[in-house]
Image (cartoon, rainbow, N blue to C red; front, side, top):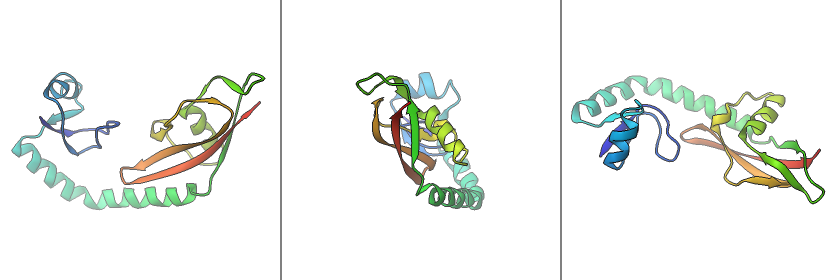
Length: 147
């Protein structure tokens, strides 16, 4: 079943992408939640016209994302966490703490755009990926230290 996404969905696609999903996922989740519409011929034509009209705006958004990515390129963060004597963290470090650390350095990044691939439960060096645009990603190194 082909659907047109109305918003970005992690591991599926971005807004206005035409994706193929299983029919149960489309009918029971995406369409009732207003996250997608069925990709009929008329819907595809409307989408093409809308994309053509928004092409300039999308290019400007991509340019802004690339500028921000260039500024974020040299940034590295240090995040303090409460740890045991063996270096294990009580809890874990997540994207909220990374967003707060970025805000302290002067970058207001939404926590939903930050992706951490591994569970952080020990002191050490890690990397987070910030998805600024569907074509622009930035890798931010950060160090977790004991407080």
